[in-house]
Every structure is written in structure tokens, then in C-alpha cells.
Length: 142
Image 1 (spheres, rainbow, N blue to C red):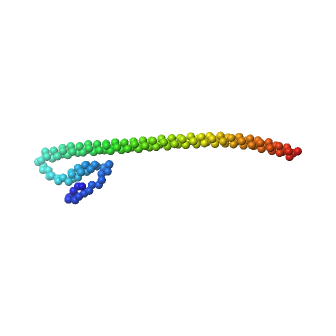
Image 2 (image 1 turned 30 degrees about the vertical axis):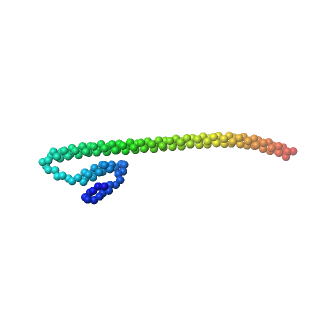
Image 3 (image 1 turned 135 degrees about the vertical axis):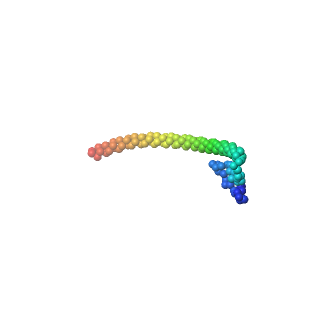
């Protein structure tokens, strides 16, 4: 909780892609600092403060970069885990599809053999029928 002009202000929850809680606190502390008037004669005090702020900014930037790199490594790790999971799932699906294809081809082969058998049986029956018509024709002509 921060105090701005004697009011309590709640910070919203910090999301992973935003500033860290310590960075927000540092920013609020900079905002809440009373400004000191700088006289023209006090050049050394202003330059020390500028150097300190520059060093502080550098440290904050380094910390922010570390945090950003940590988040990037985490995202990369999660992405790799998701890809690995997807790869395993697709391999299983591929194996199942290959099994289904093999079974379908086996059924196709069995049906083709059965169809060939039925065709040859049909040819034999047609030949027998033709012979019977021949016998019937000779019997009727007598």
C-alpha cells in the first residue's frame, strides 16, 4: 500500500509481463520524494545526485533485464514442454492411424479375395445355366 497525498492507494496485482513489485515501489518512492530546490551555486550536489541516479538506473535496468531473461527462459521452457507433449500425442495418433490403415487394408484384401471367389463362382454358375439351357433346347426340339 502506498500513500499519495495522505490517501492509501492499493497497487493492482503485478502481471508477469509488467514491472515487479519492487520496481513499482521504487517508482512510487521516487514520485513521493519531496523535490529539493537546486540553487545555481550548488553544482557539485546536483552532479552527485545525477551520478547516483544514473548508477541506480543502471542497477534497476540490470535487474529488469535479469527478470526479463528469466521470464523468457520460462516461456521457452514451457513452449518446449508444450511441443514435446504435442509431439508425443501426434506420434501416438500416427501409430493409431497406421494400425487402422493396416486393418483396413487387411479387410480390403479379404473382401477382394471373397469378391474374386464370388466372381469365379458366378462364371461357373453361368456356364452351368448355359449348359442347362442347351439341354432344355435339345429336349424341346425333339
